[in-house]
Length: 585
Image (cartoon, rainbow, N blue to C red; front, side, top):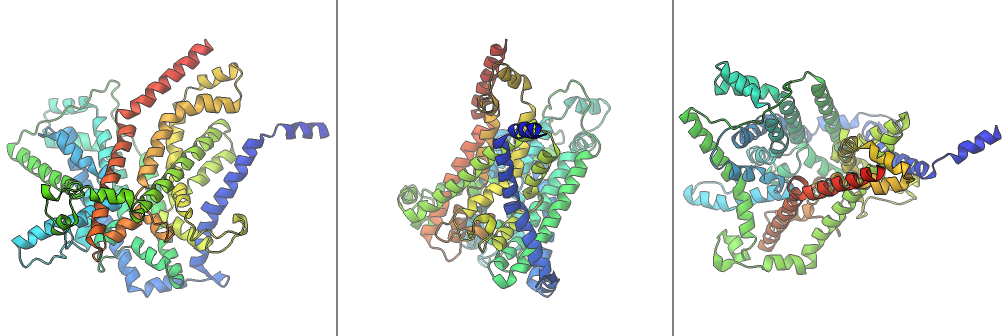
């Protein structure tokens, strides 16, 4: 008996055991305990059940108005975003429209010009001191300079900001349609409208429903746009949570509002999952033919489609073009909203590079995003490796626990960190986390984990297991196989995920607003502060430069992830696999 026990102890994988202990500590500390703390803060008082938070919200007209505004925004956005999103994909990928390539570039600009910099760009154009507003007041003398504010302004900004998902997912779905079904419908005498309505769109129903739900979710948790252009009369839940979270006496209201958002998130994810399991709307043709662009035969409709397309091109491209051009203007030209070759200067960029107060937020954001993105990728590669190799109840539980940030809004996680770690905790070695600069990258890291696991797991499924068998036959151990075989194969996906995660949180405002240290502000915080109406012209110039630099970084990232740059890693991966297979032979 003792001998058997000794043998079992010798078989224990020490690195695996230590990693399991770390995951258990991490999950309890940052995924489970903070959320339990939020629930306790919301529903208990002095150790007993309390509904005081509900009473406070019911008696707070401001909170009730925010809930109504969020629901209104979410419902209307699902209509406007999907109308515009489906239209811009159809005119660039399905119908024959002149200059479709240029239109596509403009419509995809939200992939590099989004978040806080997009809101700042629209404010720079349409705000009370904006370029377009100044032009309109000259044409319409009685126009209120503060016309671009409230629900219409938020709806306008978010309608065009949120179509990026359509240019990624719906565009891919359109390109994957079997053109044979369209030809078959034509041969049966169906016109273009009937084909679009009864053949094309039903095939894309799962994608459209998912986009509807994603849009509703985005509108419900909207933060940046309501904060920037909503004004005092149109506040939504997320900015209000931020306001209440800063007041200790109102944190229970912030917690309850966060819980409500979390419940909505879980319901939406359930709907998405159920939608995915419903019928198959895809073509069953064994040999698919690629979609060919359709010419609109009705001249009137063709003209209307072209006019709408070019108007949308103007809406999408104008903020990007003007923000870029004015970033090279001096403060006098920026203040007067005048473009002139005589006002061209590089002083704005020079200030970013030489003034510590200007470049430090940029460095902070780059460091925070890079650390979080790198940490998420490294952790998830190891997690996926363990889950795929040791298929058991424990590994399945570990995977599901790490999906918790996917079920809850980021604001709820931020509130949980604040409520839990604003005092020393034994399992954190007596340290207070709130008020520390590194709590921001920690929050980024937590939120990045679920999607990173999913993508790496998908890449792992395409991994040729014969490579691992070949390495084992050649005498390679577990670690050697991991670093010499598996990681190189997963490297293209890992690098792409690092780039996307890094890019997504480079100008983050939502999490940073809750957790940032006043002496270590991030880009999102500074851009929001500089966009304040009371900010000086230098602050506006700095925001313009920030926007251009961020667009440049995002463009480079997209090039390596979706463009030709990604081919380099694919070629390296194929050469690596070929060498290993040759060694096996």
